Length: 318
Ligand SMILES: *[C@@H]1O[C@H](CO)[C@@H](O)[C@H](O)[C@H]1NC(C)=O
Ligand SMILES: *[C@@H]1O[C@H](CO)[C@@H](O)[C@H](O)[C@H]1NC(C)=O
Ligand SMILES: *[C@@H]1O[C@H](CO)[C@@H](O)[C@H](O)[C@H]1NC(C)=O
Ligand SMILES: *[C@@H]1O[C@H](CO)[C@@H](O)[C@H](O)[C@H]1NC(C)=O
Ligand SMILES: *[C@@H]1O[C@H](CO)[C@@H](O)[C@H](O)[C@H]1NC(C)=O
Image (cartoon, rainbow, N blue to C red; front, side):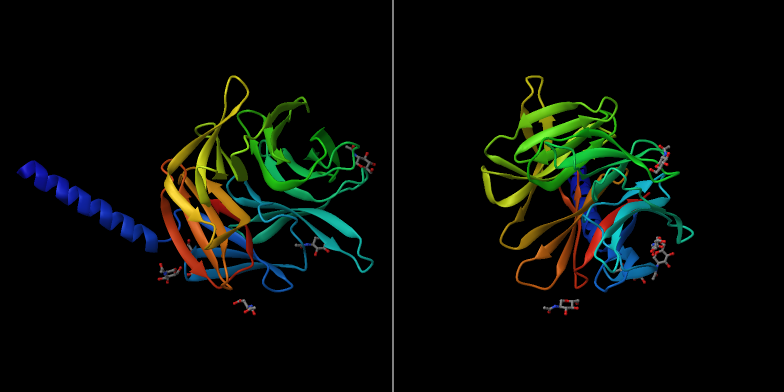
């Protein structure tokens, strides 16, 4: 009897904890770029009702909605571009100290090789910044490039095969591979050799909408469509088998229905909190919704709606 009673108490505690969780603030410090006006603003998001602009960045363009990352857990790192009065783009690397709320580096990227925007950037270590940008190398539309933080020069590390792409890309630090999906093939450039080490056709019954990397467990996480669960997105681990095939292991039971939500490619991962924080458009409503998922069990940790529907480039600091 006593034992059973104990279990009931434990159950109630768990339920209460999960309710409390939904209204609490993020466990990491969340930042985003608010582009609802001409001037982009770095914004601190405390919780579902507290959005605080902390720095005005002026009239600039971020190529992607997941272009930003963190550098040494205290700097917001991004690449952006502006257009001059002739419509010519100018490219920059931006480092913002989030504690001082000030710009640490606003570096002009030297476009001598004539390539284009960065769709994503990543840090190899605190000094080395790499990213995926448009490529003018023949036979390629995207390349992995390295940015020299002193002079803004960039060098190509390796290229991906030519084809259309949809910003499904991530740098997997422990594997030294920069993954990228191009026309239903998963590719990866080795950042040390520049070679295309991974080239695997994605099975017909899957579409990968987003890919992220959990360096603590060295695994790839994907937001995917699977023909076994129609009309919804699901979270899966993406495994590369020894036979060089892709295997999708579903994480938890959460589904995100196609008819209610629209994927915006706005997301960030915080590994210490085990959370994948995403923003979706709500179909037929002029609203967005934040959904934070636990990357180990797939459960929704937080979910709230907001009228601020131009938030992009999330980064969550420990
Ligand atoms: C948001 O939270 C931070 C601490 O995380 C606090 O310093 C700041 O004052 C909060 N913002 C508002 C508007 O309360
Ligand atoms: C959101 O945070 C603000 C200050 O940062 C606080 O005053 C408010 O109570 C919080 N709201 C919720 C719903 O947690
Ligand atoms: C970065 O520098 C460029 C060129 O000097 C300037 O136009 C732009 O406003 C600066 N950006 C920020 C965010 O300070
Ligand atoms: C960077 O680019 C400039 C202009 O093209 C060149 O003069 C300089 O030598 C380059 N620096 C390095 C380290 O390659
Ligand atoms: C959508 O919401 C934004 C922010 O609340 C507002 O500025 C905009 O006018 C709205 N658009 C429409 C079509 O209602």
